[in-house]
Image 1 (cartoon, rainbow, N blue to C red):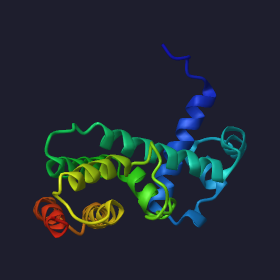
Image 2 (image 1 turned 180 degrees about the vertical axis):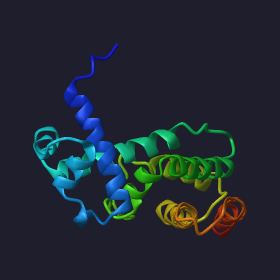
Image 3 (image 1 turned 30 degrees about the horizontal axis):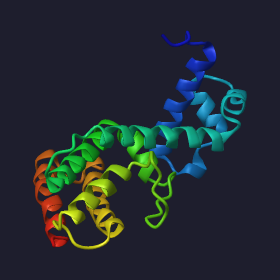
Image 4 (image 1 turned 45 degrees about the vertical axis):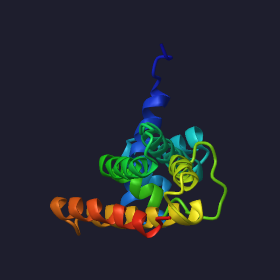
Length: 191
C-alpha cells in the first residue's frame, strides 16, 4: 500500500490537472502562475513550493504525458508480424491521444519540442515504434532508416489525430482515413 494522500498531494494533482488543461488550450506564454493557482483553487506559493515554479510544473505535466504515452505503446503485444505490430502501435497512439486529449496537446502542441534526430531514451514513447521498425527492417519487410520511417509514420498519425481532435474530421472520416493512411505509409517504405 502507498502512503496516505496529504493535502500537498491533492493540491499538486489539482495544479497538474489545471496546468494540463491550460497548456493544452492556451499558448504557454499566456499561462501565468497566478492563473494556474486560481484554476487549482490554491495560492501561487504552492506552485513554487511543490514544483519550484512554472517550469517545474511544465516539466511535470510533460513527464506525465510522456510516461502515459510510453506506457500505452509499451503495452502493445508483440507478434511475429512486425507490420501488424506497427499498425497496432498506431492504433494505440490514436487511442491514447483521443482518451488523453489535453496531455496529447501538451506533448505535441507546443510545450514539448520534438527533435527527430535526438537520442531515443529507454522511456521515450517512440522506443516501441523504433524497436518494431527495426524488426521489420531485419525481416526485410521495410527499407530505409528506422528514424526516417518512424518520423513519416508519426507525421501521418499526428496529422490525422490533430485534425480529429480539432473536429476537422468526423469519426467516420477519421476511421476511414486512419485505416488507409497507415497501411499506405508502410507500403511507401516496403522493401
